Image 1 (cartoon, rainbow, N blue to C red):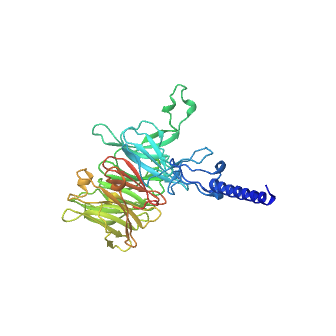
Image 2 (tube, rainbow, N blue to C red):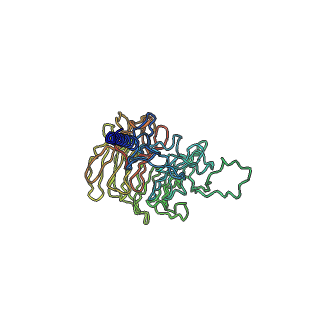
Image 3 (cartoon, one colour):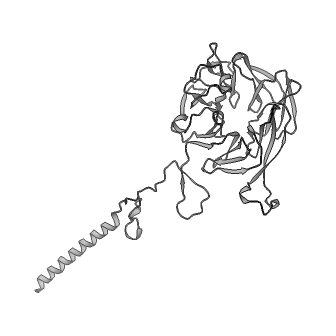
Length: 430
């Protein structure tokens, strides 16, 4: 072959080789398409050229929370935390919530056996922390760090309720028999003692380190304050009335309301826990129920109308003025914010049937299907948070509402089945 033809042939071979090498480089380095299984073809030796992000079904949703405690070197499992969460499907005998910088913890009592369980805002796992038998616990209030509670227990027969103080104490594992099945162990056991008999009502202080108790002594209501465990009782007042309810919204204010009924005038009083001095705030108003703001400046009140319906109203303490909150619900279905003290959160029925309020609701003759609304008492702004029926697997008639210290989570029980729920107020988008 002549030299000039040989050179041309070599040049052609070189061009073909360069083109082939270029095609191979492009194919392996850039052609990274998803496969039918959702995994990614990763190019040569699994390398992702220029940091390209794989596509497929391993994308982590922005609103998900990673399950803590994983020590795997791989990417931890992702847990979807629902905005509306069913915390306990079994009937609950009261609950408490505590917030730290990293999470909010909820503890509750099983109404049947008295088992204590807990769950955190960053996990779906429920933990049984005490299986001490405390049967028929139907209500409770908790201290600040959820290590103790006051509970009312239903007794057999007609004796009524017994109120006790109980604390969660670490179980001394060294004293357990080696034959004790491991599945019967819990981190804590309950230790407690009964509080004074004939308890009418009780309420924890805002700091949850003190307790107000109203006790029936010879058909007279006697008010006491004590430490949270019921020790160091100080008598602050006597009253001839024993049909009363209580809340302690602000350190220097205990709110005493007469038990509501549609055909009798009700009253709200403020009592100073240090002096025992009473001050009339509202009344007489038929069917009066109240919720007082955390600074004791505002009252949300519900009462019976002259035609037997239901009316909801705001009352401002300083000015003595009233205003319409543009919602219609019972005060028992509302809670004031802890951080944003001008905010109130209410479970508002989608429909309010004709009835005698609040009696027919308290007796279970009627029930509601609720939406959660937020009302700013300063501006009058009303905001729909969510429709519970759209997110739950059942109709929810919310009661016993509580809110955490940062106003991030709203907690409530379903009056119909006594289940326990939480609603993320920060992540919620209706």
